[in-house]
Length: 104
Image (cartoon, rainbow, N blue to C red; front, side, top):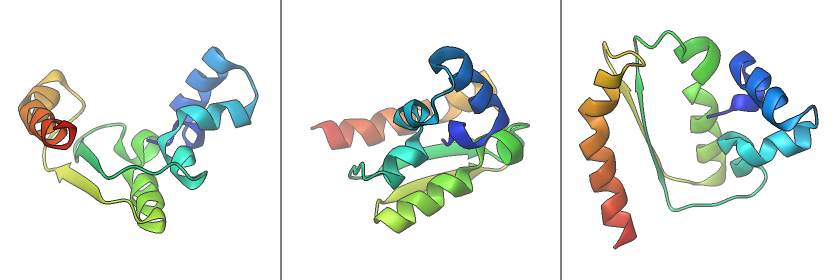
Protein backbone atom coordinates (compact mmCIF):
# COMPACT_ATOMS: atom_id res chain seq x y z
CA UNK A 1 0.00 0.00 0.00
CA UNK A 2 2.80 2.37 0.93
CA UNK A 3 5.99 0.45 0.16
CA UNK A 4 8.20 3.53 0.24
CA UNK A 5 7.26 4.01 3.90
CA UNK A 6 7.88 0.50 5.28
CA UNK A 7 11.04 -1.61 5.67
CA UNK A 8 10.22 -4.45 3.23
CA UNK A 9 9.09 -1.97 0.59
CA UNK A 10 12.14 0.20 0.96
CA UNK A 11 14.36 -2.85 0.55
CA UNK A 12 12.42 -4.07 -2.50
CA UNK A 13 12.14 -0.67 -4.16
CA UNK A 14 15.82 0.01 -3.57
CA UNK A 15 16.77 -3.39 -4.94
CA UNK A 16 14.63 -3.10 -8.06
CA UNK A 17 14.65 0.62 -8.78
CA UNK A 18 17.77 2.05 -7.13
CA UNK A 19 18.07 4.82 -4.56
CA UNK A 20 15.98 7.55 -6.23
CA UNK A 21 12.95 7.95 -3.97
CA UNK A 22 11.15 10.00 -6.64
CA UNK A 23 11.15 6.87 -8.81
CA UNK A 24 9.80 4.84 -5.89
CA UNK A 25 6.72 7.11 -5.66
CA UNK A 26 5.58 5.88 -9.07
CA UNK A 27 5.21 2.38 -7.56
CA UNK A 28 3.52 3.32 -4.28
CA UNK A 29 -0.30 3.58 -4.12
CA UNK A 30 -0.27 6.08 -1.25
CA UNK A 31 2.35 8.28 -2.93
CA UNK A 32 0.49 8.17 -6.24
CA UNK A 33 -2.68 9.39 -4.51
CA UNK A 34 -0.74 12.06 -2.61
CA UNK A 35 0.76 13.20 -5.92
CA UNK A 36 -2.67 13.63 -7.53
CA UNK A 37 -3.65 10.26 -9.01
CA UNK A 38 -7.41 9.79 -8.83
CA UNK A 39 -9.61 6.73 -9.29
CA UNK A 40 -13.27 6.03 -8.65
CA UNK A 41 -12.64 3.77 -5.67
CA UNK A 42 -10.55 1.03 -4.10
CA UNK A 43 -11.33 -2.29 -2.46
CA UNK A 44 -8.78 -3.67 -0.01
CA UNK A 45 -9.01 -6.69 2.29
CA UNK A 46 -6.49 -7.18 5.09
CA UNK A 47 -6.37 -9.91 7.70
CA UNK A 48 -6.18 -8.73 11.30
CA UNK A 49 -3.87 -11.68 12.10
CA UNK A 50 -1.49 -10.83 9.27
CA UNK A 51 2.04 -10.71 10.69
CA UNK A 52 2.84 -7.86 8.28
CA UNK A 53 -0.14 -5.67 9.22
CA UNK A 54 1.33 -3.17 11.67
CA UNK A 55 4.92 -2.88 10.49
CA UNK A 56 4.74 -3.55 6.74
CA UNK A 57 1.20 -3.07 5.35
CA UNK A 58 -0.05 -0.06 7.30
CA UNK A 59 -3.52 0.21 5.73
CA UNK A 60 -4.13 3.36 7.76
CA UNK A 61 -1.76 5.21 5.40
CA UNK A 62 -3.92 4.27 2.41
CA UNK A 63 -7.04 5.10 4.38
CA UNK A 64 -5.75 8.61 5.15
CA UNK A 65 -4.55 9.25 1.60
CA UNK A 66 -7.92 8.21 0.17
CA UNK A 67 -9.84 10.29 2.71
CA UNK A 68 -7.69 13.36 1.99
CA UNK A 69 -8.20 12.91 -1.76
CA UNK A 70 -11.90 12.09 -1.59
CA UNK A 71 -11.40 8.60 -3.02
CA UNK A 72 -13.93 6.03 -1.78
CA UNK A 73 -12.10 3.18 -0.04
CA UNK A 74 -13.69 -0.08 0.99
CA UNK A 75 -11.18 -1.30 3.56
CA UNK A 76 -12.17 -4.62 5.08
CA UNK A 77 -10.22 -5.75 8.14
CA UNK A 78 -10.91 -9.48 8.26
CA UNK A 79 -10.77 -10.87 11.79
CA UNK A 80 -8.58 -13.92 12.24
CA UNK A 81 -7.14 -14.00 8.72
CA UNK A 82 -3.43 -13.80 7.97
CA UNK A 83 -1.42 -13.36 4.74
CA UNK A 84 -2.06 -16.86 3.40
CA UNK A 85 -3.50 -18.39 0.26
CA UNK A 86 -6.62 -19.29 2.26
CA UNK A 87 -7.20 -15.60 3.01
CA UNK A 88 -6.82 -14.66 -0.65
CA UNK A 89 -9.02 -17.49 -1.91
CA UNK A 90 -11.72 -16.67 0.63
CA UNK A 91 -12.27 -13.12 -0.66
CA UNK A 92 -11.23 -13.47 -4.31
CA UNK A 93 -14.82 -13.76 -5.58
CA UNK A 94 -15.72 -10.49 -3.82
CA UNK A 95 -12.88 -8.74 -5.62
CA UNK A 96 -13.75 -10.20 -9.00
CA UNK A 97 -17.36 -9.14 -8.54
CA UNK A 98 -16.34 -5.63 -7.39
CA UNK A 99 -14.06 -5.13 -10.41
CA UNK A 100 -16.55 -6.64 -12.83
CA UNK A 101 -19.21 -4.15 -11.75
CA UNK A 102 -16.85 -1.26 -12.41
CA UNK A 103 -15.53 -2.51 -15.75
CA UNK A 104 -18.94 -2.87 -17.39
